[in-house]
Image 1 (cartoon, rainbow, N blue to C red):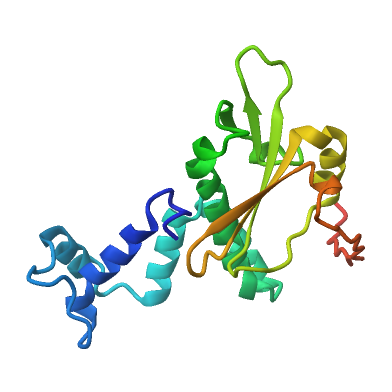
Image 2 (image 1 turned 90 degrees about the vertical axis):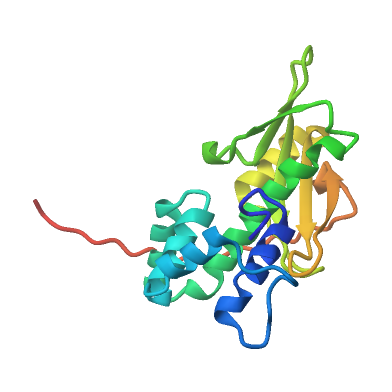
Length: 211
């Protein structure tokens, strides 16, 4: 959640501890210090808000696209796909923020300026440019909750990776559940990674009316 908000994950833990005296009999909060006044005011302000409504409110703040992602989540609930939607959304969002934070420390990419192009649907998440260089680099970011797992490329991402070859980077962030770490693959289709083609046939439902 910390990376998804673009802040230090430890900050989330610290605020959790801040509210311990209000919500926990076992945990005592910060040692030798009472709860901060503005936190106490927040606890009072939202004390009577039902958990479901409070959860939706928090998601609207955490989700990068706010109400749009909440709508997508609701649609997934209607389609009985709610179990993994929020986790995938937050993990992907956190992975992107993690990359933005760590980018200056990556030798191969540090001199390039970063542009998030996710919304353009071009087959990668970030376009990297360097002054005086016409060509750009492309970075696709993937995230995993555990230390190991499966990632997939869409058909467009796979095609773009093939076209850009050495200018395409796959950046994988893993182990969000504990301590995140990352691996970076240049030209991933010609790397130690071995991608397997998988075809999925989807039944599409349309609703028609004569007007």
